[in-house]
Length: 457
Image (tube, rainbow, N blue to C red; front, side, top):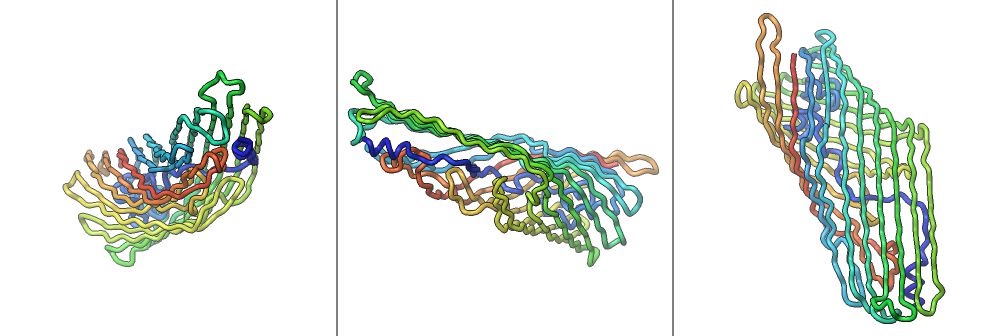
């Protein structure tokens, strides 16, 4: 009995930054109409307001103003971990599945671009490239007979995990057409990111028969809270070159996001209470708290180049893009990104004068390391995009027509990777926070619908 109680409660409590379940990677949302149709493979060929994000050089030589409002009207993320928690009790081994289904509506982009003269255009945009909001709850309750405790016991355990991770980029860009086959551009963005993470764990053992002289009552609870906000700034420069009339090359350099100010806090609370025959009563409560307030501490997002190419014909184009993400570590803000890459291939094609189609393939690889703490995941996504654009031109005498455009697109991605679950032996591990992690193979799914509307004038 003394051994079980000692193992159950003698734990060191220290401040830590949790590694929550991975909801989505960097390409979860496409930020523009053509990008949603062609899986984001537009860096070499974009020539309107989408260039603000994907390649500001595309603004050069733009001859029409464009106002674009777009959003992912619905996204469903299905995340299930079979046997994510395995608990060993005297009566047997119990596998518990974990699931964290996520339903989102995301206003992904609002952009406007207009020409200054025949060679120079400028644009402004508000983007929401990241929005994760999920939670899952799990519990186990059994009547058990522990060898070191008298009589039968009601055993219970459970945990709740909740995460919110949101990012906004606000800024502008300008593009200059130096000559008909060469364009360059640059943009500057203010970045705001907010991450909230909560994790609650509990475990208790209570005597079934509360009328015995000294009933067993053992309770443990552990709560972790993290809230971090970061304000930063980044720049983008790009170039487009047309070596031939139907071939286009693009290069976009996404400079590191530099921290302006970060603020927030981390806290860990632990409570222990124990009454059992033959031992002194235990009642302990501990709290560890860490406050974040940091100015200009360097990079919070790494350097990121993108190389792109496109082949254009009168009624269609095919584009491809390759991204490389450099590694970055910043421990006090829970940033630990490994070297990463992504590719995309997409096409847009004309069906009629007013009706266009598009489709694409993309990867959305994780920049996380192999998971080693409960709830952490490394999941690489492979996906398809598909959709259509409907154009309604309004012709005007001696001036450019006004064009109303509506895009409806779908996105599906299959995530394949690893999730750090728990293998918990109650008698040997003690409380659930001591349980070793076990990586589980997982298959996650993302399905979304995109709606974009644009006005050309």
